[in-house]
Length: 181
Image 1: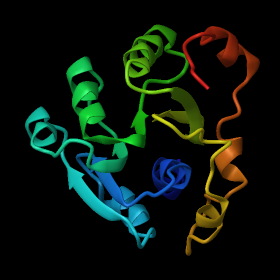
Image 2: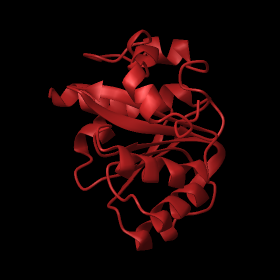
Image 3: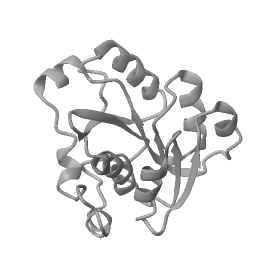
């Protein structure tokens, strides 16, 4: 997979869904490409940490508009992420292939405790991420001006954004009642 597609989709989808993506947390062991994409949003204050509950628990409550995570998928991790998110925030995480239905259902059920909207989306080469939102819908509430004003992108744009959420019927049927949109 082209690395730029992955990084652009992991960062710009939640940041262009957020009303104001000012405070952004990236949780990764190798956040260089994600940080570079986040820096394209000049209004954003980026913070990068490795995934440890100690680092997350040290963060202030309700301090982030967007959290982008490549790591951690257990109940304690999600509880801490929820605590640091603002009331209308977005959270994006990597996850097992949608073909691993039971693993993903467990993950999405944990996320349902904290988020109104939980939707997988395509991030290139058949891979998907999960966007979980406390308030804004990723296809209905996309900030079109922000999405089209990001300079230097190779893949992401305001047409790709909603199209990334299109899923085949077999996915919809398999995850019926689990995906919240």
